Length: 399
Image 1 (tube, rainbow, N blue to C red):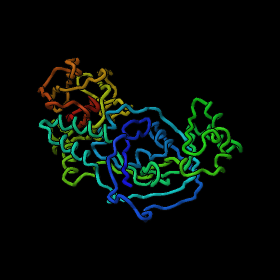
Image 2: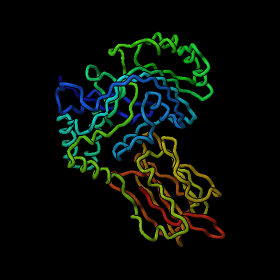
Image 3: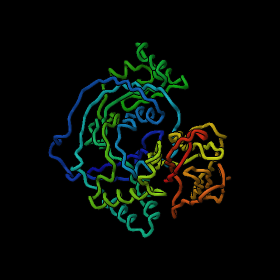
Image 4: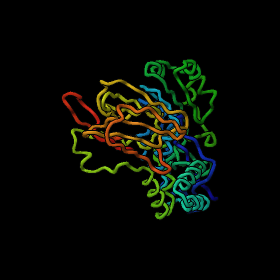
């Protein structure tokens, strides 16, 4: 028996998606007995998990960890950032009732990457232009997935052989007030809970009709191994961890070059009253820029497509002006005017050839920031204070 593993995509905020491509194989093709990292279980567990973001609620509902519990490499952060994310805010509560049958904690050393996966990564990294290498790797991850789960629960040596926990489970996710129904109903019918628009249910394994009619009966019914299902992911690693160390370094170094800064950060930039660093948002996509300006630029706020915002740079006492970007439109050039250590004016040029008005004033030393093939992803700024002009921007750095 020669069994392989498929990875999962986790860039989409609606939940994980299994890749159809087999990215890894076990080094041992057959076992005379189960390896030491496979453990039989007979456990009935009830978990109640609270989440504040819609993305986390979607993943917990499917038995996956939250975003904060997954270590994300820069290349994966980039993939998540370019995929539209749900923007609902909680709180949500997920109640999961599970029967766990088998736990498998797969050591990474037991796996070897698919030769086709390695070859496609090498091909992408050999492309001449940096942009072509990025696009090549994007296609690789679109095909092969993002992460491998390395703990699971199932008689998986005979079935799907995924790195998950396997068994049977029922999940209900919704507002806290609705989830109380699980505690208050002795003969709970999940089908009736699903009638509430704000509540979702998910049955994994077992006899689905019984679970919908009566959860208590579903829990007490014996389930043969062929009806077990993947129910939980407890630990994941990026699929790049399967690659030889040299290729891992090439991928890491390529994405380290993804973000550049204009101008380079120096001691002068952090010597002002306050430095606001927006670079932590640099892998996201800008939706619009909100400015307050009079004779100088008082503040800039960057709104991203995922619903997040950069830290406000400055005060909002001047006239508010908004520069919104269209779909697939990016800022490719930023022009600034600096006078007497004050940022007096700003202007943006986009990938579609649009040029914004000059925010503030056309006054002082002009500077144009751009990067060949690059787009604006974040703004950092130094803030100063003037008794007449109050808080204002003194320097700006684009990413």
